[in-house]
Length: 261
Image 1 (cartoon, rainbow, N blue to C red):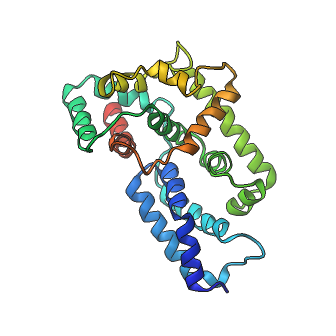
Image 2 (cartoon, rainbow, N blue to C red; image 1 turned 120 degrees about the horizontal axis):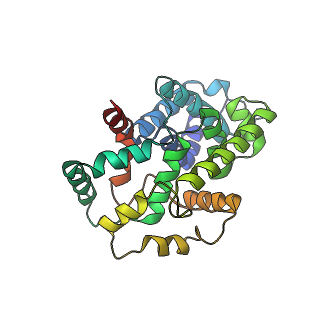
Image 3 (cartoon, helix red, strand yellow; image 1 turned 90 degrees about the vertical axis):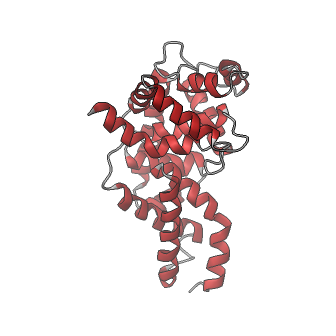
């Protein structure tokens, strides 16, 4: 059995990555931190069941984390593809609600609206619309760099289901981004990033910034998705330059319910 002090030392090495994964999975910062703590306690209490010849400690802990996250998400609805548009309209029609957003943004000293961070936030929102298995498999492989055999071990899925989960997730993401994102499609219905950029960082041209990030350098949907995921990998969702996106993620389900009731 692995010694407790070795487990604690190794857990610290990947704990921020684990919390980041859980944050993208559940879209709530405090809940992600609580789930990380729950995962730690469960793993610590079951060290005698860890089999190092079968999986790495990190893989084993992620298995526990995903099962814990699934239990948390079981009582919640998946997000709808139009939820961001619903929320945008819900706020744009209310000066009071827009003022509240401004207060949240300005509550952080030296707050900045960073296009890269918004694209990361957008990615989290859109992956929340995927089937849970698709979301998990995609995040594990394309954002957190797990190998296919590790994903099979973590999820308990067959090789075929893992492959299909990743392929279906990519197919759905390409379709959603192509239909919605005004940065890459002039007919896209979502321009939230450019609208917020105009409010909070008017000196930064959103479309020029998109070109700098290479999002408008190709029409190849696979390359565009890979570019997005590269940006996501490079962006720590737990370390934003303002609390704006945390505020959005925590409130989207409530806003959608209010706007559609």
